[in-house]
Length: 356
Image (cartoon, rainbow, N blue to C red; front, side):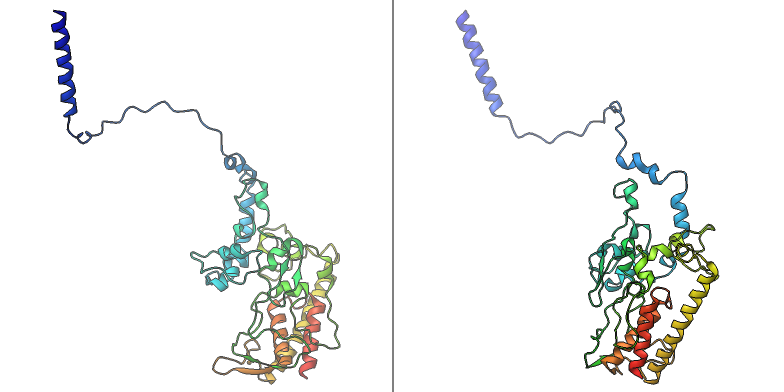
């Protein structure tokens, strides 16, 4: 009996094995079942670093709003042709282009800038890099090597400004003083472009024609350690007419902000007289030089445009080209001697003497 049971069990096992070995390919998966109930909510994690520190800057004192209010009245916000977004222009006309090349000395961005922005908070400050007070740090304050002639300047935090407020490389380039030669000008816009304020303040990149007037810098260059920001960002008590992040020394109605000057010029009346006399003298010299260049058919009658084009090129001696450069350089500075009276005066007087 036991033997029969054994053989029956063995036969059943063999049959089961044979059936399993004949199983076909697995069929497709069935439809997905309905979603189960949500699990319990986990514990709230710690706040991120940025969230923890937001109030360091975005507190209730409206500091950022006040700075923005001032900036909206600046030429950085309202002018500067930020739509000039081609690669060669974007480095100074757009915020994005500036940030790409700031501190590198590059004269062009890698490509045209899409969705161009004017200079803004992010242009000058390291906004939302660390989410601490360190984000107020400047994007660059390294000494600047100028594009024209390769001279270097260091005026502290205002090195940021020098990256753009410098002369552009002209074609033909500015000749070396004392070297004879001829040059061909093919553009009515020959000159340093619109940014010669920084090189004027530091006393660089002029065509220093030998003459009776020595080339030296005014006390502003020598004594003002932080350059531009000392005067252009001097705070005022009445909103945004000038000073602060307007970067204006003169308000729209012509009132001067002298708060950056009073450390040295403690008599307001004498200061205003000095500014007026300085600007009158330099404006007169500039007009004399412009008139002489017009008489030589180098300038057009508006005393701004050069009498040249690709179809009618202008042939000049090196001295004439240098005098033209000096004229446009001082004219584009627009401070009429305030930035650097001695250097501006020497460039104009020696250029006049050389042409006469």
